[in-house]
Image 1 (cartoon, rainbow, N blue to C red):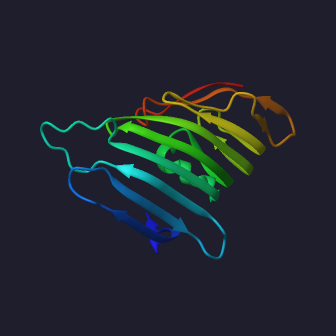
Image 2 (tube, helix red, strand yellow):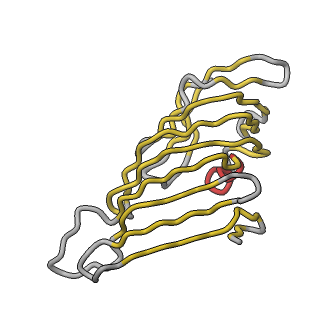
Amino acid sequence: TFEVNGDDWGVLRIDAALADLTQPTDVYLAITDTEGGKQLTVEGDITPFKKEGREFKDDVDLAISINQYPLDIAEYFIGNIISNTIGQFDASVQLNGKLKKPNLGGTIRIYDSALTINYLQTRYRIEESVTQVSNTLFDSSGGVLIDSLGNKAYVYGGISHNHLRDFGLAAEI
């Protein structure tokens, strides 16, 4: 069982194949909840061993696939921005480049969810929303937030970051 801060995320499996120290390593990681159907998989190459004179284009080249994962995992990364998060998400994201400044691209689909935006102290429901992932923004533009009275707010922007560092809120509703 893989646990973080007492939260059980499922069974962890890691496979890695290293032909020799001069080549990138094939990796496969999966965290699976066999009862709930949620799964996170990471597949691709990492270059764990650097040596003078050998230059690799990327430190990492990974495909991340997430299905039916609890959205509250986001609070580990942006807990100062959102709280009381419920619901699920699916994602398909590519992560490649240098570990110190990885490149990101892909989509995240959020559904049957609710969260509180801490800055506004307002709880919103999200029926379904698609977020575009880039090196600087988790862009939820076009998403619809519904408050407790049924009023709809339309999102422009999203969660800013700099290659998965320095997270902030860069959205208007």
